[in-house]
Image (cartoon, rainbow, N blue to C red; front, side):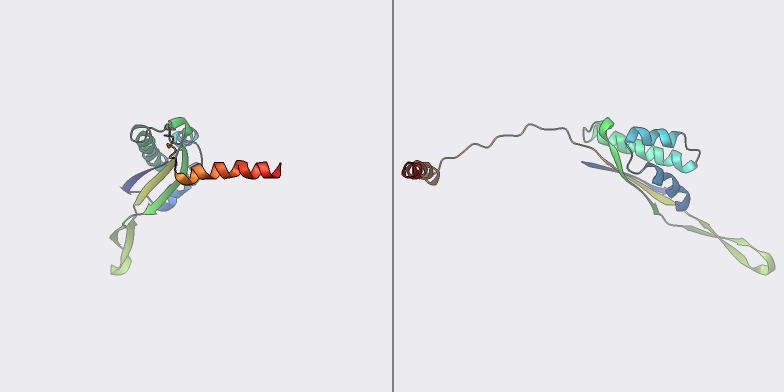
Length: 142
């Protein structure tokens, strides 16, 4: 079962955040949290919050075991960029781009097994005739 959690409009550059998400993709949740805890970057703290939200969703909404969760993908998408201008020499203006991102984390875990119902067998005329023909054929071969 897949659980997806998203944080939108985070004021951070996508390039800086993708460095952190590359480190945690494909890892179990416990080791990914350890890596994010000891990574000295602003992105690590924000991605950690999103990961903890996904873990809580998996545990509370889907009844998944947190020990078996694995990070399937951690995606950093670019969000709208704010454009500002700063005065420069000789009356010109230099652009300032304030970038923002969307953080999306997908977790994969095995769902708890449910008891399966066994289907009742229905007896039809075709199934009754077939066993009667089979012993006759075996008597002829013997």
